[in-house]
Image (cartoon, rainbow, N blue to C red; front, side):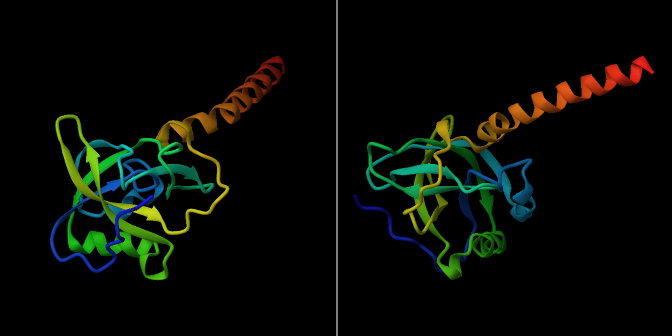
Amino acid sequence: MTHPTPINEPITGDSLVFVYGSLRSGLGNHRCMGDATLISTAILSPEPGQEFRMVSLGTFPALIDTDSETAAPATGEVYGASPEVMANLDSLEGIAHGLYERRRCMVTLEDRHLFAYVYILADSDTAAPSVEGGDWLKYLAEQRKPATRWLRARWEDDLARWSAL
């Protein structure tokens, strides 16, 4: 299995970047996107040389290298980003420390395919659970459902008790 060579040198011009986790719109690290411009939602599909699987590292996901049998599409957003935004993202993703690698990969928008930078966890030897479906937003919603049901039941019980007073 061959993978694209990491491109970890500084970015000198505007770039496209595919984000799939906490950098997505509405999530905690989206503020790091600065003045980046949302282009579209997109899918990173498995192709020869870009075979990844999304895993949960607890509060954020990671894409890891895998084989073609376990590779799965990942859903995210493509942004146009300045060199300053890319430098911020490199810092957040720990590029200088070898935590993530930045690679150019093919992503699919509704009407076209294009290359964008994607951050891939450098160490793919992890036992972290897969994010089924490859969509971090849906995964988070599914993880919250049991807690939401418990809280709603608790709230309804408390409301019933208070109403009886």
